[in-house]
Length: 210
Image (tube, rainbow, N blue to C red):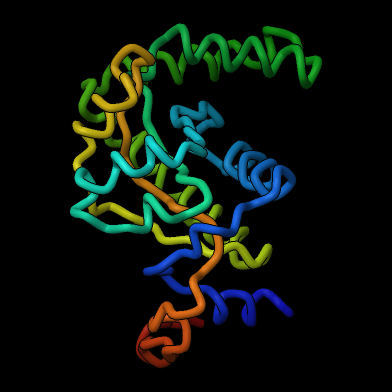
C-alpha cells in the first residue's frame, strides 16, 4: 500500500480488540518515531509515556469521559510537556550538539546566546504553549507511522489532564499530560471501521498560488 492508501485505511478507532497486543518491535517503532519528530530548535520539550498496564488503563476510563479506548487498547501513549524550558535545557542541547556533530563552541556560541535570550523573554505560559504546540506535531507523526504500520489508533483530547497527571504522579517528573493516543488493533465489530471518510474535496481544502 502507498502512503495515501495507508491514510485512507486509518480512522479514529472507537473500539479496540483487547485480546490483541502490539509487538515489542511495533512499540519500538513508535518510540523512535516520536523521538525523531522535529521540534522547535531541536530542544524536544516533550516526553512520551508508554502505558501497558490493564489495571492502570482501566483507571483512565473515568478521567477520559468513559471512553473505553484507553482501557481496551493494547497500549496508551501519553504525550506530555515539561513544566518549563530552562537555560539549562538549552545548554544541554548545545552541549549534545557539540558532541554529536563534533563542532566547536565558537560555531554555535552566538546561536546558543540568542536562543537563551529568546526563551528568557517569554513567560512560563508562553514556553508551555510552545511545547504544547509541538505535541501535536508528534501526534501527527505517530498517527502517520501507525497508518503505515497498520496499527490502529485514536487521538484523544477528551480527558482530564489534571486527573491523569495525578494518577501517574507526573508532577514529580515535572511533566504535564497534553494528549492521549491509545494504540492497538480495531475490533471486528467497530462500526466505524467500514464507514467512508467524510472529507472536503481537494478544491475546497487546498489553495494553490502560482
